Length: 353
Image (cartoon, rainbow, N blue to C red; front, side, top):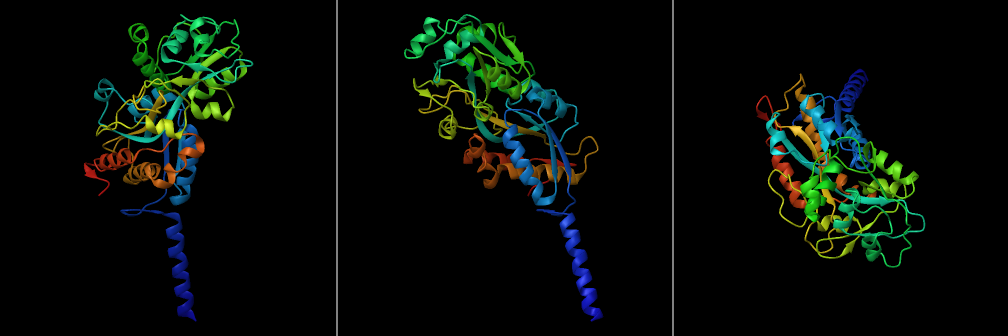
């Protein structure tokens, strides 16, 4: 009886240790508290995925949606484990910090949400959108808009564009698109996380822009599609490079990624020439340091960071994308990301085999 009791006690101790120190491919490690900051565009997807990830090993992920620009600054200051960004880092930005790895996490769409009483459907083209945000098209019943919407009763009201006040990957994606469809926009304003919009109203984050559009008549603003869906805000159907008017959905977003993906995954898929492609589609990325031993981080933190990224790339996590109005990554993007993760080190030693 005493031997059985001691055996039972030993098994209980082992069970407790296993429960408190979940595992990874290299063996057991204690659960970690991870932090990230950045893009609000993928926030609804991250909220679900990070919560599910926490059930595996007890690793908690705190993510602050302070905009892609803020997230990159936090990573550059080495105060987070990862940055979220809808804009990949430029060569210049990468030269200003230690080597990083870009991991695409999902695909999504930037939509033109609007608030027009009695207008349930709105067709727009890229050149018209550019002139609206440049202030060249001033009223909703402008001939160029009415030509695209012959059946709609467009009001003779002033258009109020709504744009991001913070450094934003969503702004980068939107203005990257505008530079491709409007020579005027490319010459006068260009693409960037922060752009000097000449007219309209500023708001912080995707939630801020969505809130202004939802509450203010005659507005139009660019936001991540999930925010338009969640608040039931109408959004425009956009004319793509193939001449089709397309709505954002999993199929049309995926169609935009039909081309080649570079080895480092830094690529723009706006204004895709593919048939059926929604023209303002984008990847969004988690960005981590290639050398993970920084700012007194431990190897367990580094392993937990890689476990998190691998989970986001997993079939289980990617299956969530459509449920929250995003699109899953193409297989080639996942495969390339796994290769890139194998270059991540701690004290110069690879963390993944």
